[in-house]
Length: 328
Image (cartoon, rainbow, N blue to C red; front, side, top):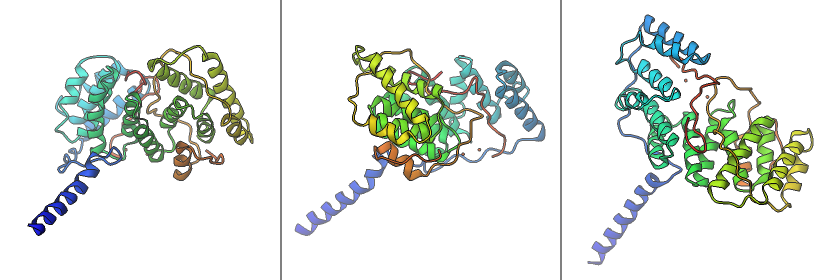
């Protein structure tokens, strides 16, 4: 009997160990049978899609959609691009198109789109489910990791949000949208010095920093924070940016910000969270250890501040966005 009890205990322990990682927010459980790769496009199909992409990148969404209508309606690549354009145009047909791709070679992109649609309606639990499925199918897609981080932020799961945003930053060091979102998270947590250092290291513009500030204040407004000290909070954020933006002053900004009491932030008009843009300035890469240290609160000295086949270019004026208060 003792041997039997001991054996059952060992089996239970092993089962618990095996089930642990699957429930961890840091680890993504891979699907056992990922979708097969898409069939190659014909020459004419590739030309039509590339032409549509050029129009899409130029902000000519209606013309881009018209060119896609020349392709077979069951072609996954054409269906995905139609769904994206219709989503940006605010058309409800996009959801049906995305759902028609869930069992296709573009399942990851379909879950991503459905996650964005759910987040735009503030259905964050549904968005979380779709985006985690998208990450399980495409774990190195920085746009999906960024959007997942934003949904975690909306759910106030801050550690999970930080993890996903740092992952997105390290996967694509040329893009700044994850950095902008991480600055918003840090400001929301009253971590002024880390936000200033990250802003300086990633070379964010004053406009980007102010947008991150507005998003952080919007989060506080949703939490019901008092607005009586809003002007002092805004002044503090702006002065932190000005000090960090001057060469050789980042360390001073960090030391000063760490000893000043942090007031509650003011209500502000909701600003969209920055997402993938087709063209961004290219800063020098930042070591992953420095980014992780910055997000965890460690003092880090300022330092100089990632698809094949058919390109999927997204326009700056009409890019897919996951905002703090919903996806566009």
